[in-house]
Image 1: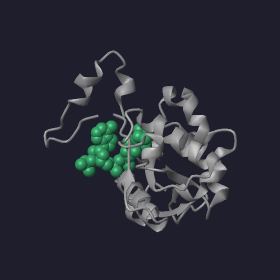
Image 2: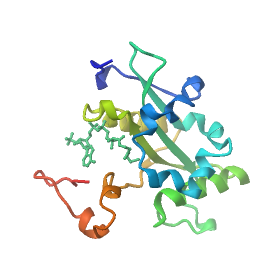
Image 3: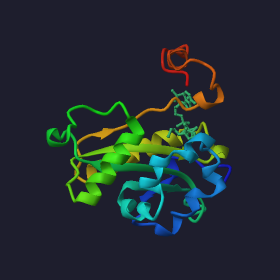
Image 4: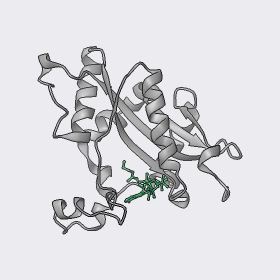
Amino acid sequence: MNETRAESLVVTTFAERPDLLAKVFEPEIQSAMPEFMRHDPTGALYYGDGNLDRYLQYGLVAVDPAAPHRPVARAFSVPFAFPDGARGREALPDGGWDQVIRWGHRDRVAGIPATAISALEIMVAPRLHGRGIAGVMLSALRDNARRLGFAELYAPLRPTDKHREPLTPFAEYAARRRADGLPRW
Ligand SMILES: CC(C)(COP(=O)(O)OP(=O)(O)OC[C@H]1O[C@@H](n2cnc3c(N)ncnc32)[C@H](O)[C@@H]1OP(=O)(O)O)[C@@H](O)C(=O)NCCC(=O)NCCS
């Protein structure tokens, strides 16, 4: 498994591999999640109370073919109606991650057809960080959105290491750049 390469991964939906749904929440992958993210009450509308079973087409899991029962990465997305003037959804929401989960939840309960899709997360097993797996998962999310009939994939961005510096002002942190000009988060 140490030879796991991003190009060799097989990525499928949880509709195809429901047996892996519980496994991607075990420490192998779940340990990559910052503690504060585990206490967001909005998250339960998607991840909790059995709701995740309704989004199996919108969740992806990656495995190395050499170990097909041991997931190495997961990705989730949520569908919702957008733009939707009748519900005051003219622009993407300032509430980001939480708000697209709320929109998706409300639409699902009310039976409103989804017209847009947003990524919610990509999470890679920490032992395999830095091998390009996030890029593979992002492409797979985009391909899955297309397969499901959506023209665009939105994504609320979280500066991934900000939680390690809670006292740094957010604007200062978000302005950091690498030598090549890309964000250093
Ligand atoms: C963020 C995460 C998904 C990256 O996965 P990965 O497979 O290690 O990333 P990759 O190897 O595909 O790197 C992709 C690019 O992102 C960059 N990158 C990765 N982590 C980064 C970070 N914290 N800050 C800035 N750039 C980062 C890499 O340098 C690379 O860019 P490059 O190709 O221009 O050098 C992974 O670290 C992770 O699972 N973190 C915990 C969960 C998380 O924060 N997910 C994202 C928000 S939901």
